[in-house]
Structure formats: structure tokens, C-alpha cells
Length: 197
Image (cartoon, rainbow, N blue to C red; front, side, top):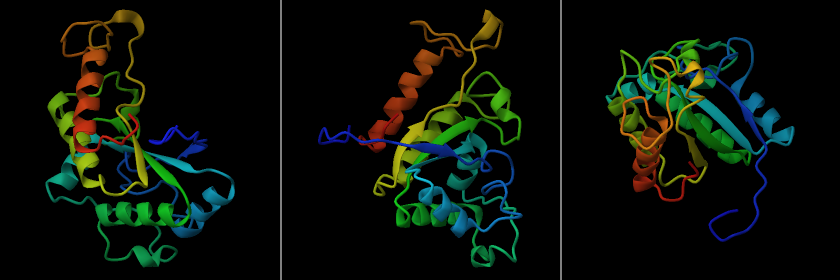
């Protein structure tokens, strides 16, 4: 339900790339961004989940903008935009097409296989970096209701109870996903209390 208690039906799809080092949507070496977003909406979707990395969000916060890789002829209107400006452009295109957005912290370090790492932090980007990324995203987009949700972390893994795997209990252990998720959610909601977490 929305903030007024009205039922809302969310029909979502996922488009990765900001988590892989492409620094924009995967596949833009072949397709046109604008027509692709329009096609997503025309197929009945109203929510776009966008995976991203802690690394990229931290870079944006620090004023660093890794190069976005796309077909410059097909997507000529993206020329002279940095990777954050392209992301903001995408949010505008989603808004124009009636799409809401869920940003998903998919991995700590930007990598095409980063989602396979079991935790929300790694040797490059700490738990504190992750909280900082969530806080920055929630604050940066707090006045734009196109962003309605933040996925704190894609699939923190707890299989095998092995060392370095996520756990779920009432401790404050570094790898306790329950404790981390509570802290991450609170950090987001402090910036934007209307977000879905």
C-alpha cells in the first residue's frame, strides 16, 4: 500500500550494468536507451530495479565518475554526460514513462560477478562504505518520488555456516546480516522516511 493506505501493484523487471563496470545499462552497445525504457513501460512494467555497486556510489559521492560504456552513435544524446548524469537522465526517462525505481546495492566492489560474494562488504569496501552508499543514495534522491525503494543488498549468503558467510541472530557480529540490515534501513529512512526498504 502507499502512504495513504491505497493498494499499489508493482510489476518489476531488472536491468543490470551499473554494478559491472559498464557504468550504465548493459546492452547499450546495441540498443537505444530511450526506446528501451519506453518498451519496458509498454510491456506493462511499472518498476525498474537497477543493480549498482557500493564502489560506484562511493565514487559518485566523492565526485569521481567512471566512464559509461555505450554505443555513442545510437545513444548520441548521452554524449558529454558522466555516469551519474546518465543515471539521473535514466531516472527522468523512467519518470516520463511512468516507471518507479528500486536501486539495489548488488555488490561491494564493481565486478560482473560481484553478486557471488556472500557479504555486503569485502576487502575493498567496508560495512561503513556500504552504509555511506545507502545514506548518500537515500539523501541524493529524497525529493524525487521516482525512487521508491532501496534494496539493501542482493542475496547476502548464509549457506554452509562457513567462515565469511552471512549469519542472522541478535549479535553485532561483522557478518550478522540482521544487524547490518537494521542499521542500513535506519540510515536510509533517516534521509527519506518514505522509502520502501
